[in-house]
Figure: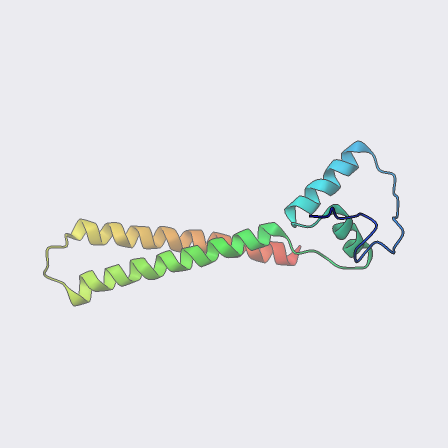
Length: 123
């Protein structure tokens, strides 16, 4: 298999742009590139051309909201089964109360994640 040459490819005709930065600045740039899952050169190019990369924190919060919505749906279905479909099949009151407490806790988590997302959007 032939080796890929660095002077061949979609960006090989452009000239590199060199910028001097301190060590801490370089580390911060690399960390930002890692967070948004872009190579450093692509991040700097996009930022210089006015592109604002999406925040990874926002995506993680969005995924957590999706997981919590699924948990709430499953818990609600279980509660409905216990209360409506099978009211006399030996489900104790403590189990029903525990399910309700879990639902309330998940709703609290969901509310706090929504507040976090609103703050991220407003900043």
